[in-house]
Image (cartoon, rainbow, N blue to C red):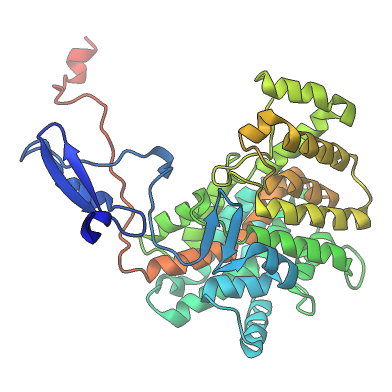
Amino acid sequence: MTQQSAETLTVRDNRTGKEYDVPITDGTIKAADLGQIKAGDDAPGLAVYDPGFVNTASCRSAVTYIDGDKGILEYRGYPIEQLAEKSNFLEVAYLLVHGALPTKAEYDAWVHEITFHTFVHENVKEFMQGFRYDAHPMGMLMASVGALSTFYPDARNISDSENRHMQIVRMIAKMPTLGAWSFRHAQGKPWVYPDNELSYTANFLSMLFKMSEQKFDADERLVKALDVLFILHADHEQNASTNAVRSVGSTQVDPYSAVAAGVGALFGPLHGGANEAVLRMLKRIGSKENIPDFIKGVKDGNERLMGFGHRVYKNYDPRAKIIKKSAEDVFEVTGTNPLLDIALELEKIALEDEYFVKRKLYPNVDFYSGLIYEAFQFPPEMFTVLFAIGRTPGWLAQWLELVQDKEQKIARPKQIYTGDRTLDFVPASERWA
């Protein structure tokens, strides 16, 4: 076999008998190269039909690497396990956005910039106060992120690198403020302004829970656990919300509008709401004694095992191992949640039972994150807001990569038309006669 044949795919069109050589690059072929395959000179070229993009690469990216079969997750080449243990969220955010770990001077400047921009315009506060008392926090977050584009009209100048940097700083800085205020709004509590003497995550907890005390002093174990959760959610390659950010961003719109689209995608229960579903499942099981009956129900198709299995991972989700340790640290502070005992026993059975092992149903990141969020006393509707805050640097890193990628074009998928053709229009006067 020649070197050339090893790097091409030979396709035989049995309709015409013609053969085509399609180049293979990085384990992929270009869908456009299939366009040359036609049934006739006037016929349309061959296209790829792939609902949900299950086997279609939309971009080249150097942000996040995932090997689902081996359970590997890396940001810019760094294993998630090392980042969660040895780094912090703002350093990871810098890594994702800039592509390399910061020097001491770069890190200090980055933290200073983000800390300086945590406040939002007072008109944003008035905008958020216009929501109903029972407005969903994710709806408030999505709308307020989109509204920021009207406060920073210069954000539309996406070709200017300094301008892009400023919008990235602003968005990472302001997301906790917007998220915390949506939480307080739902509770009817006064909003707490940022405290720039606190760290990024400690400041977020202060804006969430500070009441009449002069200074909010969060337990460092809780601060660290939430920081780790932010790191674990910071990016996850081309998931639904990242795809939404890239798709909307391909129109060259401002980054606030693109990220608002990502928040909207994350709002969906199939994407951001899985940890809430895990919590409901554990509460429904009720006690360890009920687990065997529940497992039987899963096997019989009468129950759904939430928090196990993943579209990408066919092994133990590496984030789940880390988050399990964080859960233990949190419960040292808040006290043991009886649901944790159910979760541990359920995990033990699922990892040993051939039914689940054969189907590669390993715990994913959502299995323990809901327990941690509940221990923090977050209502379930806030879970996805926390996800969005952590995911913001990843969305922005992907957006930044998109706008600098000369191969990218405005997103415009093909369709396979299945409707009627060439119908004759009958005027209403005749149709209704």
